[in-house]
Length: 301
Image (cartoon, rainbow, N blue to C red; front, side, top):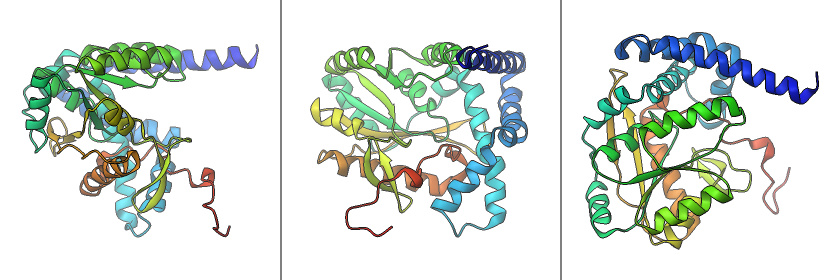
């Protein structure tokens, strides 16, 4: 069997295991399935997948003075939130109904209402924090026309049904790529609102700061806001202590300036929330990748 076929077979097996787990969990009542999926991700998947080490390494890089007892707690709590998020997204109508009942709050809500009435485009920026689709579902329920930009996954078997899951929460969806970009631009020009996540390492991104560390960050959200005169608005679904419900927060729009300054403001907005809720950000992502950072001109290394 060739390496390519082995790779496809591995992806197929992974997808079948994930589908089976999700299907089994969906047989349970919502208020059982969400914490159970969190437990499975935290206690079974995370140790096997290396997420424990990823969380620990990221915390050592960003928060080196964090007490070890808190690091150990986050090694369990972070993947627990990830597991809850996954099964919530796959819960479709039940998740939508729950989030639709949550009234959005925050200083940016009036700006969204005004933009919607005027047909002005909006870039809604969120992060892998809390549940990143909770805010989208709640704002769609308010009557806003919201599309979402997403990155297709390398496992095409899993990517297909993940797209169906996020599409059930709301459409249109725009896959990163030439075709998706064209459709996204037409949607924005028509006065739509576009949801984006901008908190992952981007090898060709700008060298900005996050938790006091250099972090390569995509400028695309700010670039789009400037090019199409769109509002740039941070939005978040913050998980409540009950582990099931959310506070839907719409922050004030980021003033238009330069792409770098606007994107740094997005990083700063997220950092404030993450510091308040360390267990709700996806510390399993390799956000910084310092080993791949090019040295600054004149630096010694």
